[in-house]
Amino acid sequence: MRYMLLIYLDEKSLDEAEREACYRESTELAEQIAATGQYLASAPLHPTSMAASVRVRSGKRLVTDGPFAETHEQLGGYFMIDAKDLDEAIAIAARIPMARRGTVEVRPVIELPGLPPVATVAPESERPRRDRRSAEGARKR
Image (cartoon, rainbow, N blue to C red; front, top):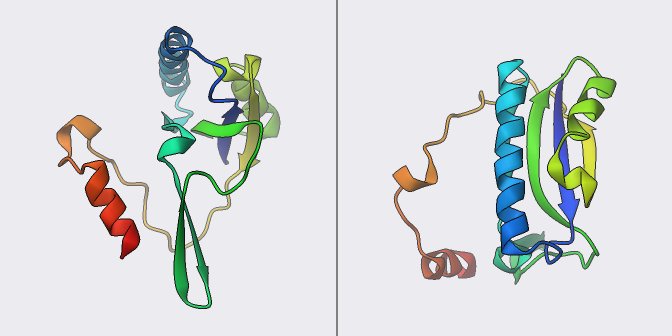
């Protein structure tokens, strides 16, 4: 079964050196999980200052800069894994570096028939660049 491991933390609690150390340790963990055949995906997220929240009400799209909810901890990243059961998923979640400073929520993924297969995405460095202004313009449309 697939599990989503959602990593929550106070995004202001890490300085740059701690953040880089976390990225290195998370990459090592991803490699270890991949070696067992359980790794599906993972990624850290940019800070909430770069987020946009989208709601549609009465047919109108409402876009707000930043996260919708005001919370102490923010979603900072995720791992998607394949585990035989919840206990195995929890054991992997406990190895995520930010479990020591934040919270890792473990949730089973619902398998919906008819969804396209997971796509392989080219690394960001190989994709065409979109600057922040073009993304902001797209939000206003």
